[in-house]
Each structure stands twice: as structure tokens, then as C-alpha cells.
Length: 75
Image (cartoon, rainbow, N blue to C red; front, top):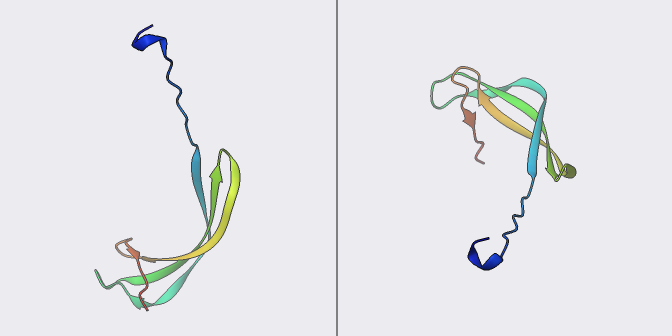
């Protein structure tokens, strides 16, 4: 064995985020990039650590239906 007979231990963290689409609907406004229609998408997000669910959220994301860009809402 090299390096004085020491063994290296590797620690691996297994984190994962699953997203599932719940529904879509048309949102008011237009895309600032191409002028297309905006869609609001409700998404269920679940964080897992070593296959155990840690966090559960429902988010609303906005996308352009024409250029498919993700749009961010500023107040």
C-alpha cells in the first residue's frame, strides 16, 4: 500500500429534489423578451436526503409560452 498504509474514506451525500407539475394556467401580462403569453405553473417540490423526504413546498413558476424562458416576478 502506498502513502504509509493509510486508507482514504469517501463520504458521499445523496441529495435530490423532485418536482412534479400540478397544473398550468394563463397569467396576465406578456414576456419582456419576445412578447408571448405568460403561463403560471404550480409545482410541487420535495427535497430528499438519502432517500428520506426532508422538505415539501408548493411553488408557482412563470414561463413564456412562446420562447419557454423562465420569468421572475418583481414587486
